[in-house]
Length: 504
Image 1 (spheres, rainbow, N blue to C red):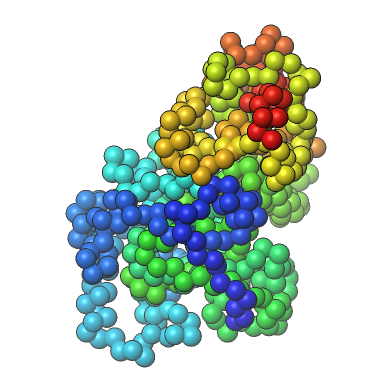
Image 2 (image 1 turned 135 degrees about the vertical axis):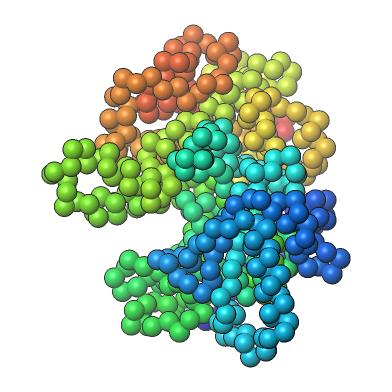
């Protein structure tokens, strides 16, 4: 395996949101952040004085939870075989494993070349801890990761009944824990989302592959990727693997790794480890998600093409399969975008009506040109506008108001403005909606007579008559949403020409 670099380590206390946005999130580059976990309850309650996991505390307080556990020695399709047990049962396994390791295992039982124990190891994964224990605040999401559309949307739309019936993903906030030697096979994150992984205790070794090298991971049939990069990889089966170059990260306790979209990675616990992990989407990686859905849709159509002529509704069948295999289909994605667009429009409308806080421009002719996300991005990079990026965008989008004191207290290093963040978000959404319009499924959706209102929180009193006609409860389908976004982007912005000139 060829190592081509190390993930940079940065003190999060000295990092501005703007620098993180430009150098890592928008640039789609990984970074290891330190100094952000000192106040977390999990770092106090879940860890013993010697730095080991406090398994007794976890079993006592959370032992009844039913969780998924991966058997690291058994492959099932492209993942490890999953078992189901309670947290208490898993802790009992872990404690028994320690006793066996201390008594019977020799140094040679640890295969350093493959970084895995030769015996079966169990790894607790994907525990929806926040959903199960909302009153126990184990941690606070760092400001750099708060612009999280995915979990905001799921919190609002996935009901408890859906979760219990298995018809909805409850959230993408997880706890992982396992003994030394547990590992996760090579993969890119679900929905091509960003992820962040915070080590509560323990030590992880990561190997990450830049997305432009992804094709080197596939077999000669271009169907499957390498499962375990530490195995003896057949160059006949995987002819490109020898050309891969990996970025390495050694992650200790109280450190958080930001994993960008599309970076395949494999992770090994070099010590007993507990981590907290989120997957998330926002305007910066939205296209990764949409491109994945398009690719998965093409594969779905190809896989059942032979029954097109006999299927009662071939497109509906494709969409069902897409949802089952990818976690989301086209309609899900549309509703997700519509919901997030509604939050952003809601925030802009409230801000524009809040006299003295976020005044709307008095004349449409004084608005800057806001036609595409690329133009907005150019403005950002050229620093033509003063901008304050949101510190708690999720809460603010829910409430539709701006708490200036909170923003001031959270970080004096923020220099970008909430309204411009919302405009940037809407421009990104509008770009994707324009591409959706060419899909036959969305054309049918836009023609549907079903009334669908993706903007339930938008205050009608904040809009003019023309806008209300297109944004209220009569909003139907994609075309109407496109029109609404276009009109909103022209109407709402924070800066007047005078204030912009003053900043410059």
